[in-house]
Image (cartoon, rainbow, N blue to C red; front, side, top):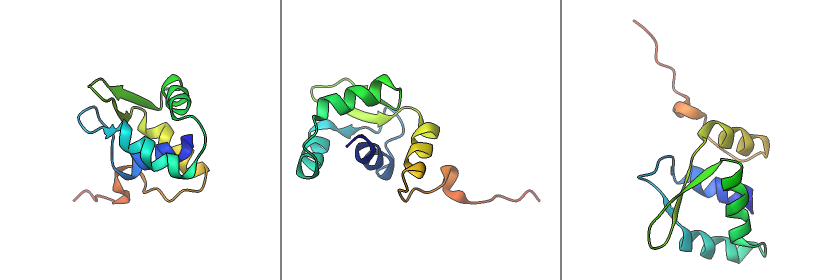
Length: 92
């Protein structure tokens, strides 16, 4: 469940505090596939420093450590684009 949660945040480009993903949407998506506890998964990812919360009426979550999240998702075989979009900029 934790890997899928990170993948959802990565896929939707939730990389900064101004672009969080709504917690109720995450719960609804993950409840269909997993029986694990959502709050426990969020707590584990927050404790490891992968995600952070935006305090609002309903909390929103975003990726706090993009490099580590990319490495974890890539290690688990998920389709993630390289950091920076993978483009090469040549110096003239």
